[in-house]
Amino acid sequence: MIQDFDNYLFHAVNAFSGNRFLDSLANLEEATNILKGGLFMAIYCWLWFEMRGRQQETRRKILIAMLMASFAALSIARTLAHIIPFRVRPMFADPLYHVPSVPVSRNFELWSSFPSDTAALFFALGVGVFILWRGAGILLLAYTCLWICLPRLFLGLHYPSDLIAGAAIGAASAGLFFWLAETRAFDRWIGGPLLRLENTYPMIFYACAFPLMYEIAITFVDVRYALHHAGFLLQLPPAVRAALGLFLLAMMSLIAAFFWRRAKSNRRFGDISSLSDTALTQPKAS
Image (cartoon, rainbow, N blue to C red; front, side, top):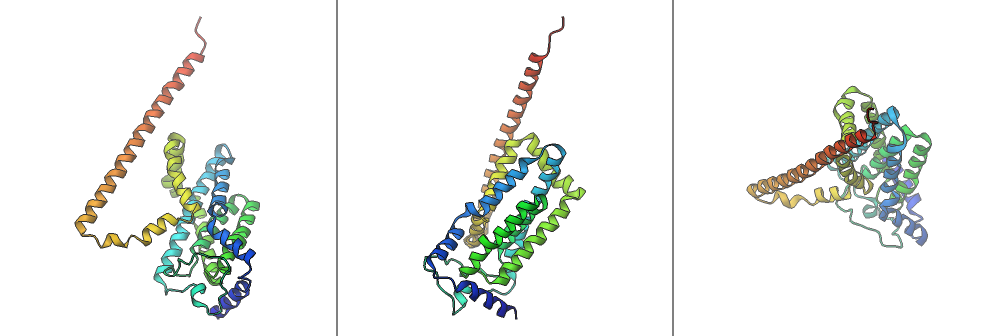
């Protein structure tokens, strides 16, 4: 029954494939991350800096939770794709598939179609915005359906049930992490420490936040590619793997220590400068 539903909707949408304008538009959507994750991250940055005082702190904790929810949704979707039976994408499996008139990336033969991790990621982010800003959230969820999900159905990257399942995973993850953001445990162990880090060492916080938001904007393509092609590491002798791991750990620790020392030095210098400015501005006793 579900397969009949999938086939009916897929054929109804894919039937328009072959129109050069629609094909080019769908291909543009697939190839342009700035109009997908880039837009979402721009709105998250807006919300991060919008409020002041106590409202800002509460909002920032929710935003942190929503970013975590997006990563959790993507991870759950990818895990399910690996542990449940493999589902071939319609562009490879459907004999009635209409081939687009423009070249479209077909590097999906080894990636299971169900569920859609793209839908999971962007629905989690969209629900996160909806929680904080209803109007923008509704627009982003509609945008996700029409601009991000529909072209993937049109091009044969997913069946409708793949996208619906991914959307459900994303929405559920956002709801779960919104609930967690209201708990004392989240405030004590995650939200509170991260906001104190942002307040005390903003250079460290934003230096770490930038690559994270960049990877979200490109749907973690770099991370997924690295994990997908890291099998050669398992073919190395155990001693070589251990040596490589220790080398990478040592380099990361050295870099982290270098930047941490610089951040603390800059903070001490800033405190001294602040005290000096205060002393100069205070009136002298007569």
